[in-house]
Amino acid sequence: MSPFLEVNDLVMQRSGIQVLEISHLAVEKGQTLAVIGPNGAGKSTLLLGLAGLLTPTSGEICLQGQAIQLKDLLAYRRRIGLVLQDALLLDTSVYNNLASGLRFRGLPKAEIKPRVSLWASRLGIDHLLSRPARQISGGEAQRASLARAFALQPELLLLDEPFSALDAPTRTRLLSDLQALLEDTRITTVFITHDLDEALMLGDQVAVLLGGRLRQVGTSEEVFATPSDSDVAAFVGVETIIPGQVLSSQDGQVRVEAQGNQFAAIGEAAPGRPVYLCLRPEDITLWLKEEAKPAHSSARNHLAGRVSRLSQQGPLVRVVVDCGFLLTALITRTSAHEMDLAEGSLVEATFKASAVHLIGR
Amino acid sequence: MEMIWDGIRQAFQLIFGADADVWEITLLSLKVSGLATAISLVIGLPLGTWLALGRFRGRGLSLSIVNTGMALPPVVVGLAISILLWRSGPLGDLHLIYTPAAIVIAQTVIAAPVVTGLTAAALQQLDPRLRLQLLGLGASRWQMVMALWQEARLPLLAALMAAFGSVISEVGASMMVGGNIRHQTRVLTTAIVLETGKGEFARAIALSIILLLLAFLVNLGLTTIQQRSARH
Image 1 (cartoon, chains in turn blue, green):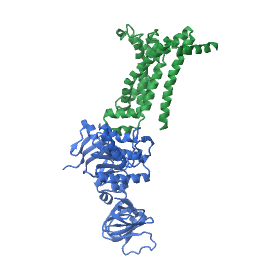
Image 2: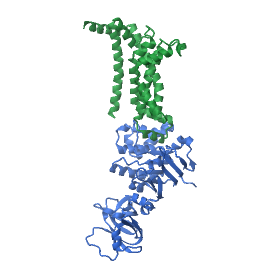
Image 3: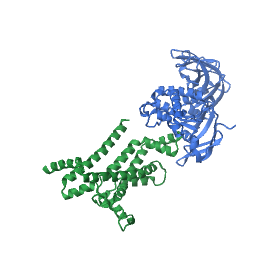
Image 4: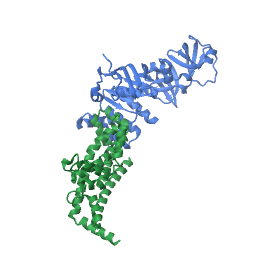
């Protein structure tokens, strides 16, 4: 069976310049694909192509096995839901905004009303329905934009950085609400972002887009833990990702169990909550196993392991340590030389509680 | 001074005394300029929309031409339409010169660029991504255009009133193609010119007051619209 959404040999241009070339990309039914990449990587171009709003130079996009027909883009666009970076609400009531897509499809009033009410309440904006859209806050507007797309019950939901214009607390709340909605509805979704946390939280699969090309597609653990090349590694930054579970949380101190180890982290998290522990390679210090460590070290996390790979990266050395899972550290060439590190060396990795970044999964 | 006060007093008598001539002239003015504005809307709204949203070669040049057209001197329009409609002219067989229809045509030529240019400006002020969002919501081309008009409804209404304001007060073209014939093509502006020339200041003042009142109402409408949009 073919995937729910499939892209083959897609080439797209903007103002005559090729900005995107994707040989193959597939999203399975009910999955969320997070596409990450820096500004100008071609993410939005990809999304506009998937939305039938920008015509590919060549290649094909198939939804449920049917290729998009250029002569019938309207029918295709009525199968998708689109949410952009800015809510772009119409200058009318919030209700009319939520109803707009349904009205374009010619649905009778009796069908529109319950759908609008349902999605307004699921996004927590039912009390705003009679308000003019110009008078609600940015976060509320983005909720309205999401409700407007969900109300269409689309086969495919396309989200283009829907949170990047929001302030941090608003973004966090909306992000976890959206996570719950996607899990609940299982709408097949393509989610564009330049934010790694968002990609981790929402994406079943993560695709890294750099310079108009897909550099890696895989689960978030795969992409972040084993970047396919140094460009991807440099972009994702965080390289060690361990799925775990919160044991306890008190006074800003969190204990997390992961891969048979206990870790200390800083922050707040409900006990029992599944999380990802994210570690940046530059936050990890390596010691030789028999070496005496300074007693005053404030690092509260210690892991024993064996060096499984060493690679040069400019003035630095990337060291992959097998501690039951793969941990990546970045150390200077000088210290690698002093420690006489080689593949198979027994080492101890230490890092501070504040170096552990927790993300809900 | 005496003459002015006398004129104003007599003017109010003419206005409120239901002077048949004064009302006939006012009504014709409203009919002719209203019709010209309506035709301009039918031409200018789609044309302005096409210029604002379309992607074609020469779009910038077309917009410049339309914007120049917004400042067409009425006498030049009057001359051009006179030549066209003259008995021996290219459209002479239609026998339209010195009829209300001729004034409507001339005023349409004046008002259509105003509606077109202001429509294009109103739509270009909208966020260009709004079009993508509307299409992404499943709007057909026509539904998208309707939604954009709805979104720009205040500036579009302002465009319409600006067009009406420009034709109700123009005199050159109406005089040249209409001929200011009593009971046939005499409108407010041409009548004011005539009465002033005859020294009939009371009538001229009465007609002027009506014209000013119409202009005031148009501007009141415009201001209200602008204030309402400024509040958002």
